[in-house]
Length: 109
Length: 117
Image (cartoon, rainbow over all chains, first blue to last red; front, top):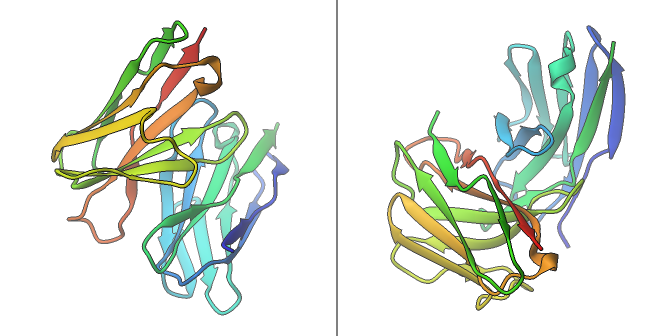
């Protein structure tokens, strides 16, 4: 079956750096997405990786290793507003998005 | 980025009534829209894929007669929850993909929180 794993919850301190990991096993691979979702709101797009390597976008970076079925989202200079759930999603060979359960990130002052 | 608007954002209804949720792509054409359901503290669950001008494709376990989807134009898809019951209370989210873009990024509506009394 298809599976996306990411930690359920993480805690970090304001101003610090946090890395949220995502491992996947899917039938085929056509890209990996990271979304941010604040409680009670719809997800918002953060990043997209289809080739191996690091994609940097401001305070957020996303890394992909297709051979390892692994990605991480790196958040730097954490702010309180970064407290949210972070969803990893993989597009499989049928171009269907398979969603992880999300990682709830708690930022402490 | 592209904008998807969803309406209403919150709706409370009595058990047995039907509720319609609209999803509009405001500045792009979406031949395909997706409807998700999300329970508290859980991830998005794809309910169905809405295709303009044709029948929706429902995921396994989703009752097509209960969750009616209509995609009559390139910018509008509707989800109707028929004969709603308290267990249908959930957060419903639509999304669309701007095919003109290159990543296939999904743009989400604001979501609709349905409470069935």
